[in-house]
Image 1 (cartoon, rainbow, N blue to C red):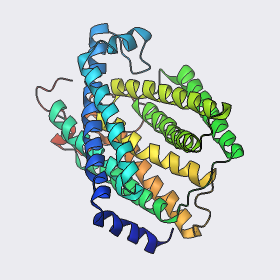
Image 2: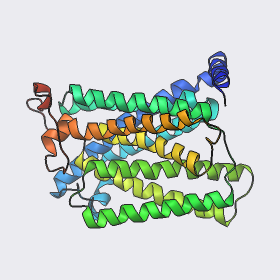
Image 3: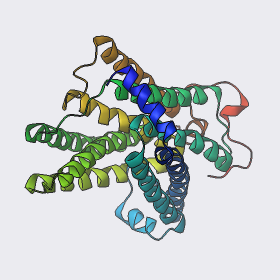
Length: 331
């Protein structure tokens, strides 16, 4: 797809009222995602307090069962389901380059919402990290939309995707089993983002195969793999809530997820085969900036600094009152 074609696609979107419905749907999805993350985070921290056990190194089975009885967690889950429905509906009627970047707005909303709830005002360094996340993912998705061309997912390529996902799950599971006492929110956030990137890819594959009336054993394997990746990713997200603020979780999901999906499309499916070298270099640079923003948010988020001092990463400080939690805050 050329730059001119992308411009025509954008102009067409704003001339077609039906396509314009994708914008409010995507924004509604971002709002639901933000509030869903906040309510789920509240439910996880409540379960931790009631159980008297820290879930930062992995939620126990009893804690997971307790979540199913927490109204706040169930409400958050419902909102996240609505967010998914809104995003899928938006993608069905609007171009990817119009809808996908709007999901990053959830990070901004979640940051403001969490600052109000927790009393931890964003600092200069945490705001810089958020700008890197949002700006990086906007540019990354836009660049991908310019040069990406949709390719058929052959059986061989699908086997590569499934095999890679299996390796990723094994590596993440091994890290969790061996190092979970030392790992905190950043590990779980990035792990969930990677897994959800595979989930998005497999969901697209399954939809394409169903549209072609090709539901064979390999499609069934894709469904099983999608459920497995989504389940592990959901567990990672809930554990991340116990060791980090909700806006850090949303940052990882809205940045790492689409980057992984695009990387799969480029490396495995060859969707950017026609892209010039400078575009590939730009992919790497912009993606690195967005990921740097996630890591920076984990290092400089005021709530992380005040409540998660056991993180095995170097932290910075703005040296102002914004780095300290507000008086009377209770999380």
